[in-house]
Image 1 (cartoon, rainbow, N blue to C red):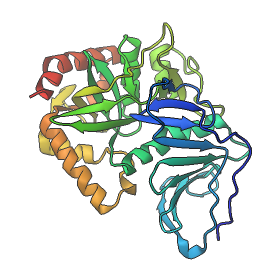
Image 2: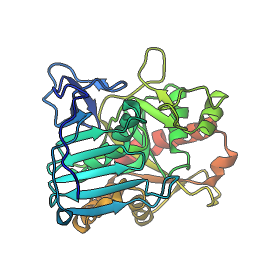
Image 3: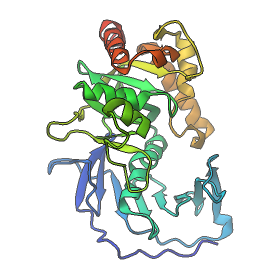
Image 4: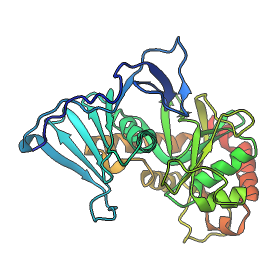
Length: 344
């Protein structure tokens, strides 16, 4: 049985701080470093975040249903992530192997966050700004791709692929050349009439040390996302540094980074709508958590997406093509075909 949780007193629960991310206005009881602040005229927060507390819940075993268990496990063999329905869907409980927890209400309008003493607020923010907000968006019906996105000529180029295929590295290489970044790891898309728009996420890009070394000469050239984490943080939007794109931009072209074990003869290949659809289906975010109806709706949206937006495949020849050369090939392809075709 779950024991009752009473509100903790680590933080004042008044929602004093407002930020923008993924098209949402976030209201928080603590300041969140690195997010874009909402101005005084911004509408009230449509996602409330309560740090340092959990909802007061008491549930018997028959009111709790394990809904998701991750395939990856921690050092002790425990699943890295588990998600429960609590009180017949009144709450979702998201529990990480390190003891960090998030709870969502039925309307996906409030998030509670709590972490153990051996973790920190910075660790918790890393979960919140990535997988937790990604799940909130999906449950609210927003299509999200496992991707990164940059701005080229005021349109969005989206790099899709599984972890380790090079999408974040390519986005960071574009950032180094002066292009603004919209999002990293999760790209949220909204449909407006005959076009799709990419929602700006938050001003940070996360890279593995090998990518940092490739781009900046040393794996330690950038700070870790949090103490003890392997990934490194590229801050965006700071004076004189890489730029962050705060506008919603029309989606121009999608580039799918294929498995590095695959071989092709061209760096950038045109693929059919059918193949594009199937590849995108395999790269949507948090798809394993959706029910049958939600997956059907996702498939319909992706069908409209590939009918309106050009999709290209980046193949394994990138392993023998320098990162700067690859970025230039993408830029030329995008400007020559991408957003012009996307406006058809």
